[in-house]
Length: 623
Image (cartoon, rainbow, N blue to C red):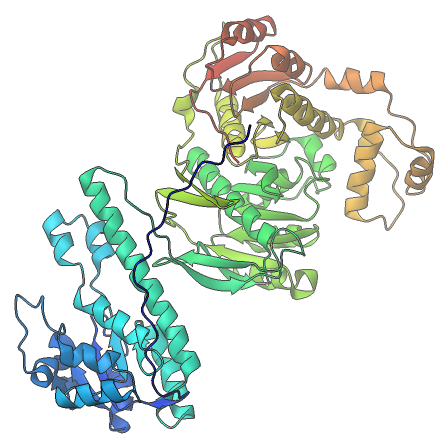
Protein backbone atom coordinates (compact mmCIF):
# COMPACT_ATOMS: atom_id res chain seq x y z
CA UNK A 1 0.00 0.00 0.00
CA UNK A 2 1.04 3.59 -0.57
CA UNK A 3 0.51 6.13 2.19
CA UNK A 4 0.51 9.84 1.47
CA UNK A 5 1.31 11.50 4.77
CA UNK A 6 0.08 15.11 5.14
CA UNK A 7 2.68 17.85 4.99
CA UNK A 8 2.80 20.73 7.47
CA UNK A 9 0.06 23.25 6.76
CA UNK A 10 1.05 26.85 6.18
CA UNK A 11 -1.16 29.54 7.65
CA UNK A 12 -1.36 32.56 5.36
CA UNK A 13 -1.31 36.05 6.89
CA UNK A 14 -3.53 38.77 5.52
CA UNK A 15 -2.09 39.86 2.16
CA UNK A 16 -2.08 43.59 1.48
CA UNK A 17 -3.19 44.96 -1.86
CA UNK A 18 -0.94 47.31 -3.82
CA UNK A 19 -1.30 51.04 -3.12
CA UNK A 20 -1.95 52.90 -6.34
CA UNK A 21 -0.07 56.02 -7.33
CA UNK A 22 1.36 57.78 -10.34
CA UNK A 23 3.67 55.80 -12.60
CA UNK A 24 6.84 57.49 -13.75
CA UNK A 25 10.25 56.34 -14.90
CA UNK A 26 12.41 59.32 -14.00
CA UNK A 27 12.01 60.84 -10.53
CA UNK A 28 13.98 64.05 -9.80
CA UNK A 29 16.05 64.15 -6.60
CA UNK A 30 15.08 67.20 -4.53
CA UNK A 31 15.72 66.01 -0.96
CA UNK A 32 18.26 63.48 0.36
CA UNK A 33 18.69 61.85 3.75
CA UNK A 34 22.31 60.93 4.54
CA UNK A 35 23.62 58.94 7.52
CA UNK A 36 26.84 57.02 6.93
CA UNK A 37 29.55 55.48 9.08
CA UNK A 38 31.78 54.91 6.03
CA UNK A 39 32.38 58.46 4.83
CA UNK A 40 34.44 57.46 1.78
CA UNK A 41 33.49 59.80 -1.07
CA UNK A 42 30.42 61.19 0.70
CA UNK A 43 31.59 64.82 0.78
CA UNK A 44 32.34 64.93 -2.94
CA UNK A 45 29.05 63.27 -3.82
CA UNK A 46 27.07 65.62 -1.58
CA UNK A 47 28.83 68.58 -3.21
CA UNK A 48 27.41 67.30 -6.49
CA UNK A 49 23.95 67.08 -4.90
CA UNK A 50 24.38 70.59 -3.52
CA UNK A 51 25.18 71.90 -7.00
CA UNK A 52 21.70 70.71 -8.02
CA UNK A 53 20.13 72.47 -5.01
CA UNK A 54 19.19 69.15 -3.40
CA UNK A 55 18.24 69.67 0.24
CA UNK A 56 20.48 67.62 2.55
CA UNK A 57 19.13 66.05 5.74
CA UNK A 58 21.64 64.35 8.02
CA UNK A 59 22.56 63.19 11.51
CA UNK A 60 25.49 63.31 13.91
CA UNK A 61 28.97 62.81 12.50
CA UNK A 62 27.79 62.83 8.89
CA UNK A 63 26.16 66.26 9.30
CA UNK A 64 29.33 67.55 10.98
CA UNK A 65 31.56 66.30 8.12
CA UNK A 66 29.33 67.88 5.48
CA UNK A 67 29.18 71.23 7.28
CA UNK A 68 32.95 71.27 7.65
CA UNK A 69 33.13 70.86 3.87
CA UNK A 70 31.04 74.03 3.48
CA UNK A 71 27.73 72.34 2.64
CA UNK A 72 24.33 73.45 3.94
CA UNK A 73 22.78 70.67 5.99
CA UNK A 74 19.58 70.37 8.02
CA UNK A 75 19.72 68.10 11.07
CA UNK A 76 17.09 65.37 11.05
CA UNK A 77 16.10 66.46 14.57
CA UNK A 78 15.33 69.97 13.25
CA UNK A 79 13.26 68.49 10.44
CA UNK A 80 11.27 66.16 12.72
CA UNK A 81 11.09 68.50 15.70
CA UNK A 82 12.22 65.56 17.88
CA UNK A 83 15.77 65.55 19.28
CA UNK A 84 17.98 62.47 19.22
CA UNK A 85 17.59 60.55 22.49
CA UNK A 86 18.40 57.37 24.39
CA UNK A 87 22.15 57.55 23.68
CA UNK A 88 21.48 57.92 19.97
CA UNK A 89 19.30 54.82 19.78
CA UNK A 90 16.46 56.95 18.44
CA UNK A 91 17.37 59.41 15.70
CA UNK A 92 15.32 58.72 12.60
CA UNK A 93 12.45 56.58 13.88
CA UNK A 94 9.82 59.26 13.21
CA UNK A 95 6.73 59.59 10.96
CA UNK A 96 8.22 62.64 9.22
CA UNK A 97 11.17 60.47 8.14
CA UNK A 98 9.40 57.25 7.22
CA UNK A 99 6.35 59.07 5.88
CA UNK A 100 8.65 61.02 3.58
CA UNK A 101 10.17 57.76 2.37
CA UNK A 102 7.02 55.64 2.13
CA UNK A 103 4.50 58.12 0.78
CA UNK A 104 3.16 57.03 -2.61
CA UNK A 105 3.47 59.88 -5.07
CA UNK A 106 0.30 60.74 -6.92
CA UNK A 107 -1.94 58.95 -4.41
CA UNK A 108 -4.52 61.53 -3.21
CA UNK A 109 -4.86 60.05 0.28
CA UNK A 110 -1.10 59.88 0.86
CA UNK A 111 -0.53 63.34 -0.55
CA UNK A 112 -3.20 64.93 1.68
CA UNK A 113 -2.04 63.11 4.83
CA UNK A 114 1.57 64.13 4.22
CA UNK A 115 0.47 67.76 3.78
CA UNK A 116 -1.63 67.68 6.95
CA UNK A 117 1.25 66.29 9.05
CA UNK A 118 3.99 68.45 7.51
CA UNK A 119 5.78 65.49 5.94
CA UNK A 120 8.14 66.37 3.08
CA UNK A 121 9.01 63.90 0.35
CA UNK A 122 12.47 62.35 0.63
CA UNK A 123 13.72 61.13 -2.75
CA UNK A 124 17.12 59.67 -1.85
CA UNK A 125 18.54 57.84 1.17
CA UNK A 126 22.28 57.21 1.59
CA UNK A 127 23.26 55.09 4.57
CA UNK A 128 25.53 52.38 6.00
CA UNK A 129 24.59 49.93 8.74
CA UNK A 130 26.35 49.66 12.08
CA UNK A 131 29.30 47.24 11.77
CA UNK A 132 27.74 44.33 13.66
CA UNK A 133 29.79 41.53 12.05
CA UNK A 134 33.04 43.46 12.48
CA UNK A 135 32.18 43.99 16.15
CA UNK A 136 31.62 40.25 16.62
CA UNK A 137 34.90 39.39 14.83
CA UNK A 138 36.77 41.84 17.06
CA UNK A 139 35.97 39.64 20.04
CA UNK A 140 33.73 42.22 21.72
CA UNK A 141 31.47 41.15 24.54
CA UNK A 142 27.79 40.29 24.15
CA UNK A 143 26.47 43.69 25.29
CA UNK A 144 28.74 45.63 22.91
CA UNK A 145 27.75 43.39 20.02
CA UNK A 146 24.08 43.99 20.77
CA UNK A 147 24.64 47.76 20.89
CA UNK A 148 26.01 47.53 17.36
CA UNK A 149 22.75 46.12 15.98
CA UNK A 150 21.43 48.87 13.76
CA UNK A 151 17.71 49.67 14.07
CA UNK A 152 17.14 53.00 12.36
CA UNK A 153 19.39 52.18 9.40
CA UNK A 154 17.61 49.00 8.29
CA UNK A 155 14.26 50.68 8.89
CA UNK A 156 15.09 53.59 6.57
CA UNK A 157 16.68 51.19 4.10
CA UNK A 158 13.58 49.00 3.90
CA UNK A 159 11.23 51.97 3.69
CA UNK A 160 13.20 53.51 0.84
CA UNK A 161 13.65 50.21 -1.00
CA UNK A 162 9.98 49.28 -0.63
CA UNK A 163 8.97 52.59 -2.18
CA UNK A 164 11.56 52.31 -4.97
CA UNK A 165 8.91 53.33 -7.51
CA UNK A 166 9.69 56.85 -6.24
CA UNK A 167 12.71 56.72 -3.90
CA UNK A 168 16.36 55.73 -4.35
CA UNK A 169 18.34 53.78 -1.74
CA UNK A 170 22.17 53.84 -1.70
CA UNK A 171 24.04 51.53 0.68
CA UNK A 172 27.66 51.63 -0.53
CA UNK A 173 30.20 54.26 -1.63
CA UNK A 174 30.73 52.05 -4.69
CA UNK A 175 27.31 53.18 -5.95
CA UNK A 176 28.05 56.93 -5.92
CA UNK A 177 29.67 57.06 -9.35
CA UNK A 178 26.85 55.12 -11.01
CA UNK A 179 24.22 57.29 -9.33
CA UNK A 180 25.96 60.54 -10.32
CA UNK A 181 26.22 59.36 -13.93
CA UNK A 182 22.54 58.42 -13.90
CA UNK A 183 21.51 61.83 -12.56
CA UNK A 184 23.65 63.68 -15.10
CA UNK A 185 21.98 61.76 -17.90
CA UNK A 186 18.47 62.40 -16.56
CA UNK A 187 18.47 66.07 -15.48
CA UNK A 188 19.07 65.28 -11.82
CA UNK A 189 16.69 62.32 -11.66
CA UNK A 190 16.92 58.52 -11.43
CA UNK A 191 15.28 55.88 -13.58
CA UNK A 192 13.03 53.10 -12.31
CA UNK A 193 15.54 50.53 -13.53
CA UNK A 194 18.31 51.90 -11.31
CA UNK A 195 15.98 52.32 -8.32
CA UNK A 196 14.85 48.71 -8.63
CA UNK A 197 18.44 47.39 -8.88
CA UNK A 198 19.56 49.45 -5.89
CA UNK A 199 16.51 48.28 -3.92
CA UNK A 200 17.37 44.64 -4.64
CA UNK A 201 20.90 45.18 -3.31
CA UNK A 202 19.48 46.89 -0.24
CA UNK A 203 17.13 44.03 0.61
CA UNK A 204 19.98 41.55 0.11
CA UNK A 205 22.05 43.60 2.54
CA UNK A 206 19.39 43.56 5.25
CA UNK A 207 18.84 39.83 4.75
CA UNK A 208 22.56 39.21 5.26
CA UNK A 209 22.66 41.59 8.23
CA UNK A 210 19.71 39.92 9.96
CA UNK A 211 21.14 36.47 9.22
CA UNK A 212 24.40 37.42 10.94
CA UNK A 213 22.49 38.66 13.99
CA UNK A 214 20.30 35.54 14.18
CA UNK A 215 23.33 33.26 13.83
CA UNK A 216 25.18 35.16 16.55
CA UNK A 217 22.21 34.96 18.92
CA UNK A 218 21.86 31.22 18.31
CA UNK A 219 25.56 30.72 19.09
CA UNK A 220 25.16 32.60 22.36
CA UNK A 221 22.14 30.50 23.31
CA UNK A 222 23.98 27.28 22.38
CA UNK A 223 21.00 26.36 20.22
CA UNK A 224 20.52 25.81 16.52
CA UNK A 225 19.39 28.85 14.59
CA UNK A 226 15.64 28.69 13.88
CA UNK A 227 16.49 29.43 10.24
CA UNK A 228 19.59 30.11 8.18
CA UNK A 229 19.69 32.90 5.63
CA UNK A 230 22.51 32.87 3.10
CA UNK A 231 22.91 35.91 0.89
CA UNK A 232 25.01 35.84 -2.26
CA UNK A 233 26.13 38.66 -4.52
CA UNK A 234 26.34 37.92 -8.26
CA UNK A 235 29.92 38.51 -9.45
CA UNK A 236 30.03 37.41 -13.09
CA UNK A 237 28.11 35.16 -15.51
CA UNK A 238 29.43 31.88 -16.89
CA UNK A 239 28.89 30.64 -20.43
CA UNK A 240 27.14 27.57 -18.99
CA UNK A 241 27.32 25.20 -16.03
CA UNK A 242 28.74 21.67 -16.15
CA UNK A 243 27.22 21.10 -19.59
CA UNK A 244 26.28 23.41 -22.50
CA UNK A 245 22.54 22.81 -22.02
CA UNK A 246 22.79 24.16 -18.45
CA UNK A 247 22.62 27.70 -19.72
CA UNK A 248 21.90 29.57 -16.51
CA UNK A 249 25.20 29.75 -14.64
CA UNK A 250 27.13 32.34 -12.68
CA UNK A 251 29.60 32.85 -9.87
CA UNK A 252 28.42 34.54 -6.67
CA UNK A 253 30.23 35.68 -3.57
CA UNK A 254 29.01 35.43 -0.01
CA UNK A 255 27.56 38.75 1.09
CA UNK A 256 30.18 40.84 2.86
CA UNK A 257 33.10 38.90 1.38
CA UNK A 258 35.20 38.91 -1.76
CA UNK A 259 35.96 36.00 -4.07
CA UNK A 260 39.08 33.94 -3.24
CA UNK A 261 40.79 35.04 -6.45
CA UNK A 262 41.10 37.81 -9.00
CA UNK A 263 40.80 37.11 -12.73
CA UNK A 264 43.86 38.50 -14.50
CA UNK A 265 43.14 36.99 -17.91
CA UNK A 266 40.64 34.79 -19.73
CA UNK A 267 37.06 33.73 -19.01
CA UNK A 268 36.96 30.78 -16.60
CA UNK A 269 34.18 28.23 -16.84
CA UNK A 270 32.23 26.34 -14.20
CA UNK A 271 34.53 23.28 -14.09
CA UNK A 272 37.65 25.46 -14.46
CA UNK A 273 36.76 27.19 -11.21
CA UNK A 274 35.96 23.97 -9.38
CA UNK A 275 39.40 22.72 -10.40
CA UNK A 276 41.08 26.01 -9.50
CA UNK A 277 39.64 26.28 -6.00
CA UNK A 278 40.45 22.66 -5.11
CA UNK A 279 43.92 22.83 -6.69
CA UNK A 280 44.78 26.05 -4.86
CA UNK A 281 43.78 24.62 -1.48
CA UNK A 282 45.88 21.52 -2.18
CA UNK A 283 49.10 23.38 -3.07
CA UNK A 284 48.69 25.88 -0.22
CA UNK A 285 48.36 23.00 2.23
CA UNK A 286 51.30 21.11 0.71
CA UNK A 287 53.48 24.20 1.04
CA UNK A 288 52.45 24.69 4.67
CA UNK A 289 53.07 21.03 5.55
CA UNK A 290 56.42 20.51 3.79
CA UNK A 291 57.90 23.99 3.53
CA UNK A 292 58.50 23.32 -0.18
CA UNK A 293 57.03 24.99 -3.25
CA UNK A 294 54.07 22.90 -4.41
CA UNK A 295 52.16 22.45 -7.67
CA UNK A 296 49.10 20.52 -8.82
CA UNK A 297 47.59 19.52 -12.15
CA UNK A 298 43.79 19.15 -11.94
CA UNK A 299 41.20 17.59 -14.24
CA UNK A 300 37.48 17.27 -13.41
CA UNK A 301 37.89 18.14 -9.74
CA UNK A 302 40.59 15.57 -8.98
CA UNK A 303 44.36 15.88 -9.28
CA UNK A 304 46.07 14.17 -12.20
CA UNK A 305 49.28 15.03 -10.39
CA UNK A 306 50.68 16.98 -7.45
CA UNK A 307 54.23 17.52 -6.26
CA UNK A 308 56.67 19.56 -4.22
CA UNK A 309 59.99 20.91 -5.47
CA UNK A 310 62.40 17.99 -5.06
CA UNK A 311 65.46 17.76 -7.39
CA UNK A 312 65.18 15.36 -10.34
CA UNK A 313 66.98 12.03 -10.59
CA UNK A 314 69.23 11.72 -13.64
CA UNK A 315 66.88 9.42 -15.54
CA UNK A 316 63.94 11.77 -14.96
CA UNK A 317 65.51 14.49 -17.11
CA UNK A 318 65.23 12.22 -20.13
CA UNK A 319 61.82 10.81 -19.17
CA UNK A 320 60.34 14.30 -18.75
CA UNK A 321 62.12 15.74 -21.83
CA UNK A 322 64.18 18.41 -20.08
CA UNK A 323 67.86 19.24 -20.48
CA UNK A 324 70.12 17.61 -17.91
CA UNK A 325 72.17 20.78 -17.41
CA UNK A 326 69.08 22.94 -16.81
CA UNK A 327 68.67 24.54 -13.39
CA UNK A 328 65.06 24.90 -12.27
CA UNK A 329 63.41 27.45 -10.04
CA UNK A 330 61.34 25.87 -7.29
CA UNK A 331 58.05 26.79 -9.01
CA UNK A 332 59.15 25.32 -12.34
CA UNK A 333 60.45 22.14 -10.66
CA UNK A 334 57.24 21.60 -8.69
CA UNK A 335 55.02 21.95 -11.77
CA UNK A 336 57.38 19.83 -13.92
CA UNK A 337 56.94 17.00 -11.42
CA UNK A 338 53.18 17.52 -11.00
CA UNK A 339 52.62 17.50 -14.75
CA UNK A 340 54.73 14.35 -15.26
CA UNK A 341 52.90 12.20 -12.74
CA UNK A 342 50.38 11.38 -15.48
CA UNK A 343 51.04 13.60 -18.50
CA UNK A 344 48.32 11.93 -20.55
CA UNK A 345 45.63 12.78 -17.97
CA UNK A 346 47.13 16.25 -17.44
CA UNK A 347 46.34 17.18 -21.05
CA UNK A 348 44.11 20.28 -20.81
CA UNK A 349 44.60 20.63 -17.06
CA UNK A 350 44.09 23.52 -14.66
CA UNK A 351 47.27 24.02 -12.68
CA UNK A 352 48.04 25.58 -9.33
CA UNK A 353 51.35 26.74 -7.88
CA UNK A 354 51.88 27.74 -4.25
CA UNK A 355 54.50 30.44 -4.96
CA UNK A 356 55.04 33.37 -7.33
CA UNK A 357 55.12 32.16 -10.93
CA UNK A 358 58.38 33.16 -12.61
CA UNK A 359 59.46 33.37 -16.23
CA UNK A 360 60.94 29.86 -16.36
CA UNK A 361 57.72 28.32 -15.03
CA UNK A 362 55.66 30.32 -17.52
CA UNK A 363 57.85 29.21 -20.43
CA UNK A 364 57.53 25.57 -19.43
CA UNK A 365 53.77 25.90 -19.00
CA UNK A 366 53.39 27.68 -22.34
CA UNK A 367 54.43 24.58 -24.29
CA UNK A 368 51.94 22.36 -22.45
CA UNK A 369 48.23 22.04 -23.33
CA UNK A 370 46.54 23.61 -20.32
CA UNK A 371 43.41 25.67 -19.65
CA UNK A 372 44.60 27.90 -16.85
CA UNK A 373 46.54 28.56 -13.68
CA UNK A 374 45.98 29.84 -10.16
CA UNK A 375 48.85 31.19 -8.05
CA UNK A 376 49.44 33.90 -5.44
CA UNK A 377 51.22 36.12 -7.97
CA UNK A 378 53.22 36.40 -11.18
CA UNK A 379 56.33 38.25 -12.26
CA UNK A 380 55.73 40.79 -15.04
CA UNK A 381 57.60 38.57 -17.53
CA UNK A 382 55.64 35.46 -16.56
CA UNK A 383 52.32 37.27 -16.82
CA UNK A 384 53.14 38.53 -20.32
CA UNK A 385 54.11 35.01 -21.48
CA UNK A 386 51.00 33.38 -20.04
CA UNK A 387 48.64 36.04 -21.42
CA UNK A 388 49.83 35.14 -24.93
CA UNK A 389 48.95 31.46 -24.48
CA UNK A 390 45.87 30.02 -26.26
CA UNK A 391 45.54 33.10 -28.41
CA UNK A 392 45.14 35.29 -25.33
CA UNK A 393 42.40 33.09 -23.79
CA UNK A 394 44.54 31.30 -21.20
CA UNK A 395 42.91 31.70 -17.77
CA UNK A 396 45.07 33.37 -15.14
CA UNK A 397 43.79 33.66 -11.56
CA UNK A 398 45.55 35.38 -8.69
CA UNK A 399 44.68 33.68 -5.41
CA UNK A 400 44.00 35.66 -2.25
CA UNK A 401 46.45 34.64 0.47
CA UNK A 402 44.95 33.87 3.89
CA UNK A 403 41.44 33.88 2.42
CA UNK A 404 38.74 33.19 5.03
CA UNK A 405 36.30 30.72 3.48
CA UNK A 406 34.21 30.54 6.63
CA UNK A 407 33.84 27.83 9.24
CA UNK A 408 30.97 26.03 7.51
CA UNK A 409 30.08 25.31 3.89
CA UNK A 410 26.76 24.74 2.16
CA UNK A 411 25.78 22.78 -0.95
CA UNK A 412 22.41 22.46 -2.68
CA UNK A 413 21.50 19.11 -4.24
CA UNK A 414 18.05 18.37 -5.66
CA UNK A 415 16.32 20.95 -3.52
CA UNK A 416 18.13 20.02 -0.31
CA UNK A 417 20.82 22.13 1.31
CA UNK A 418 23.68 20.26 2.97
CA UNK A 419 25.73 22.02 5.63
CA UNK A 420 28.96 20.87 7.25
CA UNK A 421 32.01 22.34 8.92
CA UNK A 422 34.80 22.71 6.40
CA UNK A 423 37.47 20.01 6.37
CA UNK A 424 40.14 22.11 8.06
CA UNK A 425 42.24 19.19 9.34
CA UNK A 426 45.92 19.81 8.57
CA UNK A 427 48.11 16.82 7.73
CA UNK A 428 51.57 16.92 9.31
CA UNK A 429 54.47 14.65 10.25
CA UNK A 430 52.90 14.08 13.66
CA UNK A 431 50.04 12.21 11.95
CA UNK A 432 52.56 9.57 10.80
CA UNK A 433 53.88 8.72 14.27
CA UNK A 434 51.62 5.74 15.03
CA UNK A 435 53.59 3.09 13.15
CA UNK A 436 51.89 -0.27 13.78
CA UNK A 437 54.13 -2.62 11.78
CA UNK A 438 57.30 -4.45 12.78
CA UNK A 439 59.28 -2.12 10.54
CA UNK A 440 59.18 1.22 12.34
CA UNK A 441 61.55 3.50 10.48
CA UNK A 442 60.12 6.30 8.34
CA UNK A 443 62.88 8.47 6.93
CA UNK A 444 62.43 12.13 6.03
CA UNK A 445 61.77 11.25 2.39
CA UNK A 446 59.07 8.76 3.32
CA UNK A 447 57.43 11.21 5.74
CA UNK A 448 57.40 13.86 3.02
CA UNK A 449 55.92 11.47 0.46
CA UNK A 450 53.24 10.19 2.84
CA UNK A 451 52.21 13.79 3.56
CA UNK A 452 52.15 14.61 -0.15
CA UNK A 453 49.97 11.58 -0.88
CA UNK A 454 47.61 12.16 2.05
CA UNK A 455 47.10 15.86 1.34
CA UNK A 456 46.54 15.07 -2.32
CA UNK A 457 43.77 12.61 -1.39
CA UNK A 458 42.07 15.24 0.77
CA UNK A 459 41.18 17.00 -2.51
CA UNK A 460 40.52 13.86 -4.61
CA UNK A 461 37.06 12.40 -5.31
CA UNK A 462 36.51 9.40 -3.04
CA UNK A 463 37.16 6.53 -2.76
CA UNK A 464 40.78 7.39 -3.44
CA UNK A 465 44.26 5.96 -3.09
CA UNK A 466 47.50 7.66 -4.08
CA UNK A 467 51.14 6.65 -4.60
CA UNK A 468 54.05 9.08 -4.14
CA UNK A 469 57.81 9.00 -4.73
CA UNK A 470 60.45 11.76 -4.51
CA UNK A 471 57.88 14.40 -3.53
CA UNK A 472 55.47 13.74 -6.41
CA UNK A 473 52.30 11.74 -6.94
CA UNK A 474 53.07 8.89 -9.32
CA UNK A 475 49.58 7.38 -9.35
CA UNK A 476 46.17 8.67 -8.26
CA UNK A 477 43.15 6.37 -8.18
CA UNK A 478 39.97 8.43 -7.74
CA UNK A 479 36.24 7.88 -7.49
CA UNK A 480 36.05 4.09 -7.30
CA UNK A 481 33.46 2.20 -5.27
CA UNK A 482 35.97 -0.51 -4.30
CA UNK A 483 39.20 0.40 -2.51
CA UNK A 484 41.20 -2.33 -4.18
CA UNK A 485 40.03 -0.99 -7.54
CA UNK A 486 41.45 2.39 -6.50
CA UNK A 487 44.75 0.66 -5.78
CA UNK A 488 44.72 -1.14 -9.14
CA UNK A 489 43.79 2.02 -11.07
CA UNK A 490 46.47 4.10 -9.37
CA UNK A 491 48.89 1.18 -9.58
CA UNK A 492 48.52 1.03 -13.36
CA UNK A 493 49.54 4.68 -13.46
CA UNK A 494 52.55 3.92 -11.21
CA UNK A 495 53.68 1.23 -13.65
CA UNK A 496 53.33 3.59 -16.59
CA UNK A 497 55.23 6.34 -14.76
CA UNK A 498 58.09 4.01 -13.86
CA UNK A 499 58.27 2.29 -17.27
CA UNK A 500 58.61 5.68 -18.97
CA UNK A 501 62.16 5.46 -17.61
CA UNK A 502 62.84 2.12 -19.36
CA UNK A 503 65.75 2.36 -21.86
CA UNK A 504 63.52 1.18 -24.72
CA UNK A 505 60.98 3.90 -24.00
CA UNK A 506 63.65 6.59 -23.70
CA UNK A 507 65.17 5.60 -27.04
CA UNK A 508 62.00 5.59 -29.16
CA UNK A 509 63.07 7.07 -32.57
CA UNK A 510 60.44 9.77 -33.15
CA UNK A 511 60.30 11.54 -36.49
CA UNK A 512 61.11 15.24 -36.58
CA UNK A 513 58.04 17.39 -35.96
CA UNK A 514 56.03 14.99 -33.79
CA UNK A 515 54.31 17.17 -31.19
CA UNK A 516 55.14 16.94 -27.49
CA UNK A 517 51.74 15.58 -26.39
CA UNK A 518 51.76 13.07 -29.26
CA UNK A 519 55.13 11.82 -28.02
CA UNK A 520 53.70 11.49 -24.50
CA UNK A 521 50.71 9.52 -25.77
CA UNK A 522 52.88 7.34 -28.01
CA UNK A 523 55.14 6.34 -25.11
CA UNK A 524 52.16 5.41 -22.96
CA UNK A 525 50.65 3.28 -25.73
CA UNK A 526 54.04 1.61 -26.30
CA UNK A 527 54.12 0.66 -22.63
CA UNK A 528 50.51 -0.58 -22.68
CA UNK A 529 51.05 -2.42 -25.95
CA UNK A 530 47.43 -3.44 -26.57
CA UNK A 531 47.10 -1.95 -30.07
CA UNK A 532 44.43 -2.71 -32.60
CA UNK A 533 45.82 -3.38 -36.08
CA UNK A 534 44.67 0.02 -37.37
CA UNK A 535 46.00 1.82 -34.30
CA UNK A 536 49.37 0.10 -34.54
CA UNK A 537 49.79 1.21 -38.15
CA UNK A 538 49.15 4.83 -37.20
CA UNK A 539 51.38 4.55 -34.12
CA UNK A 540 54.31 3.14 -36.14
CA UNK A 541 54.05 6.03 -38.61
CA UNK A 542 55.41 8.40 -35.94
CA UNK A 543 58.90 6.79 -35.97
CA UNK A 544 61.87 6.72 -38.31
CA UNK A 545 61.92 2.95 -37.81
CA UNK A 546 59.50 0.54 -36.18
CA UNK A 547 60.46 0.15 -32.49
CA UNK A 548 60.98 -3.35 -31.10
CA UNK A 549 58.22 -4.63 -28.80
CA UNK A 550 58.53 -3.96 -25.08
CA UNK A 551 57.68 -7.44 -23.82
CA UNK A 552 55.76 -8.30 -20.67
CA UNK A 553 58.86 -10.05 -19.37
CA UNK A 554 60.97 -6.91 -19.90
CA UNK A 555 58.40 -4.77 -18.14
CA UNK A 556 58.14 -7.15 -15.19
CA UNK A 557 61.93 -7.35 -14.83
CA UNK A 558 62.28 -3.55 -14.92
CA UNK A 559 59.49 -3.05 -12.37
CA UNK A 560 61.38 -5.26 -9.89
CA UNK A 561 63.76 -2.31 -9.44
CA UNK A 562 60.95 -0.06 -8.17
CA UNK A 563 61.24 0.57 -4.44
CA UNK A 564 60.69 3.22 -1.81
CA UNK A 565 57.20 4.18 -3.01
CA UNK A 566 54.63 5.46 -0.49
CA UNK A 567 50.90 4.77 -0.61
CA UNK A 568 48.11 6.60 1.24
CA UNK A 569 44.40 5.81 1.40
CA UNK A 570 41.57 8.23 2.22
CA UNK A 571 39.90 5.55 4.40
CA UNK A 572 40.93 2.24 5.96
CA UNK A 573 41.93 -0.78 3.90
CA UNK A 574 39.11 -3.28 4.55
CA UNK A 575 41.15 -6.30 3.35
CA UNK A 576 44.76 -7.20 2.72
CA UNK A 577 44.21 -7.42 -1.07
CA UNK A 578 45.20 -3.75 -1.48
CA UNK A 579 48.53 -4.40 0.25
CA UNK A 580 49.12 -7.53 -1.83
CA UNK A 581 48.69 -5.54 -5.02
CA UNK A 582 50.77 -2.60 -3.76
CA UNK A 583 53.66 -4.96 -3.06
CA UNK A 584 54.01 -5.55 -6.82
CA UNK A 585 54.72 -1.83 -7.36
CA UNK A 586 57.66 -1.23 -5.02
CA UNK A 587 55.66 0.15 -2.09
CA UNK A 588 57.68 0.45 1.11
CA UNK A 589 55.53 2.84 3.18
CA UNK A 590 51.81 2.97 3.93
CA UNK A 591 49.55 5.59 5.55
CA UNK A 592 45.87 4.96 6.28
CA UNK A 593 43.36 5.97 8.96
CA UNK A 594 42.98 2.48 10.44
CA UNK A 595 39.81 1.42 12.21
CA UNK A 596 38.84 -1.64 10.17
CA UNK A 597 37.99 -4.98 11.81
CA UNK A 598 40.66 -6.31 9.45
CA UNK A 599 43.44 -3.98 10.69
CA UNK A 600 45.34 -6.95 12.09
CA UNK A 601 45.20 -8.82 8.78
CA UNK A 602 46.34 -5.72 6.86
CA UNK A 603 49.20 -5.11 9.32
CA UNK A 604 50.29 -8.74 8.97
CA UNK A 605 50.38 -8.31 5.18
CA UNK A 606 52.61 -5.24 5.52
CA UNK A 607 54.95 -7.19 7.79
CA UNK A 608 55.16 -10.00 5.25
CA UNK A 609 56.27 -7.55 2.56
CA UNK A 610 58.60 -5.56 4.82
CA UNK A 611 56.49 -2.39 4.64
CA UNK A 612 56.20 0.26 7.36
CA UNK A 613 52.57 1.31 7.96
CA UNK A 614 51.19 4.11 10.13
CA UNK A 615 47.63 4.71 11.27
CA UNK A 616 46.80 8.42 10.97
CA UNK A 617 43.34 8.23 12.53
CA UNK A 618 42.11 10.74 9.92
CA UNK A 619 39.56 9.84 7.25
CA UNK A 620 39.77 12.07 4.18
CA UNK A 621 36.61 11.46 2.14
CA UNK A 622 35.97 14.17 -0.45
CA UNK A 623 32.75 14.47 -2.46
